[in-house]
Length: 402
Image (cartoon, rainbow, N blue to C red; front, side):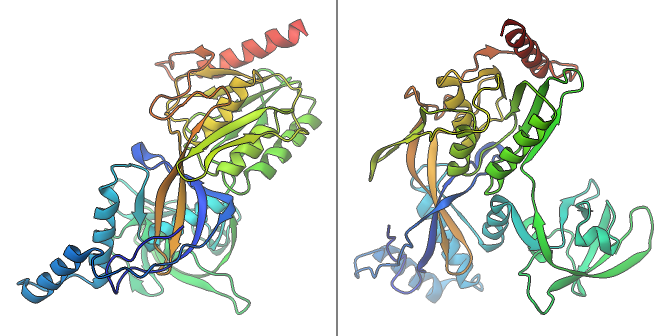
């Protein structure tokens, strides 16, 4: 797959491409898949390619009254304008800090000190260390205000994705890391810590036995990363040692992630059948069928969904519903039914390009429509988890009749 040069001198070579599901509107974010895609190489354009853009660039450089932004700022703006003309919300450009953060999150692991970076109500950038992370072991506590990184004062208005990248980096044999200066919450005391980079794992799954129904296991998938299938198998194995006889799979507020990983997860509950169908202008139709041998093909299953269930999570819910493997409970899902390629560019930026649409096994399109549950429920105004309560009721009825 190739992309033409933006101008005769400034369109960079694509260095890698990975097929992903992407969701970027309404706060949803998407991710990489495990299988690769061929590198895309920049192609020399003729004099007629982007001729007017080149002419405008020359006129601006020769006549504009004020100093021009850096060249990469101009180039990024041109790329964003090019992609905006396609009128596709899921085809877009990420600058290097955002592209790097996305890659880290969707891989499920990264080199760093292990902190969440957020902005508090006062507008200050604060840190929340992961348990047992290098940051926690060094002494960082919840709510520490970040003042400086490597002795360089931090602008409180700095973008959070840029700050996150400051706390991450390659793990080297020589011992890489970062120095952070923080102010402890509710004090004026400042401390500086030199913290080494280590591999930080981002769990995508949480599970437990339901206290109110100890015969039922509960698995929540937060997103689909490269680690999710193994985490799913580990969760099921652990729950089976606790003698569960039914399962709730919670996909509420799961905004998606990796296509192949969602297919793998769905396959753990199926013993054959179709999982998802892709339709592409360039490659035609691809049917993704299950490979028999899932680890939880016999457990009675309920899937919970809502309007925050999107993309790869809808693939799983749609596959389990259409194969009559699970009862789906909740609200209509978001309706993200397209597949994207993501190409990394040589300066660390990336571009997402919608490459195909997908259908459920019954050939139902979900893009802009969403998946309708078997049992629709209105969320409780008092915050009670009525969907989980209904899931327990349905599973206990199935178990009683079996």
